[in-house]
Amino acid sequence: MDVTLADVNRDEDLRRVVADSDVVVNLIARLHGSAAEFEQTHVGLPRRLVEACRLTGVRRVVHVSALGAGADAPSMYQRSKAAGEAVLTASGLDVTLMRPSVVFGADDRFMNLFARLQTVLPVMPLAGASCRLQPVWVRDVADALVLAVERRDTIGRIYELAGPKIYTLAELVRLAGRWSGHPRPVFGLPAPLAKLQARVMECLPGEPMISRDNVDSLKVDNVTSGTVPGLAALGITPAALESVMPMLLARRDGIARLDVWRRGAGR
Image (cartoon, rainbow, N blue to C red):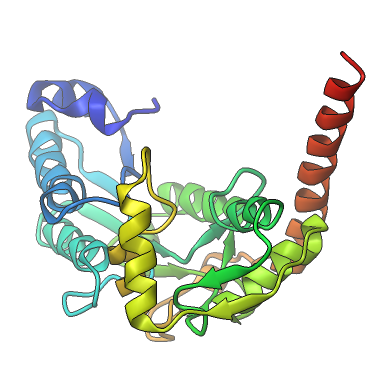
């Protein structure tokens, strides 16, 4: 059953959703928001989930956190993720924690966003350009979740889910531009300008492309620690970004070009 945060605003709704389940997999999260909103989603929901599981007799939980989660991390997102982990770890339930890096795939909001921006912008001013990341393919994350559900030896463990290669954010943006056919010059913004750019983005309608909290997250590298198991411990060989995204981004842009031609032809 696919559930959003709106579906479980009430405790009775949450109990109804988890009742009669063998395993609950929690992927509900938010990337932008206030301290209260991060608290509600990343800490309050796990706390309520623990109580709902106890009341309905469900013992098994697989929880998707985030690489970089830490009580002393620079961003509200990362700190709230760590606090949510702590709630589940102390619950006494059979919990597996998954910490994926930034996820790439056909409809991601990462490489596709940077590719799309480079179709309209002449240059790419970038916050956190030197931050190192270790992107992971969405299918590898999905396979890891399935194995965590199936294997009881994953209970009580934390897994860091990351790809085989580390890139700077600037390198990833350049790759997105090149693979989509719209490479643009990329230059890093100093911290004050990065925060100013994010503040302006937050004032625009809709979900911001980047927030000040995102900029804070980019103050630390988003790579595996090497202190906990990864995909290899689950028998998964992670796919390289270069083996997946060039075709997906080229196809995405190619379809967009066809749409433009169709409109021009009156179709």
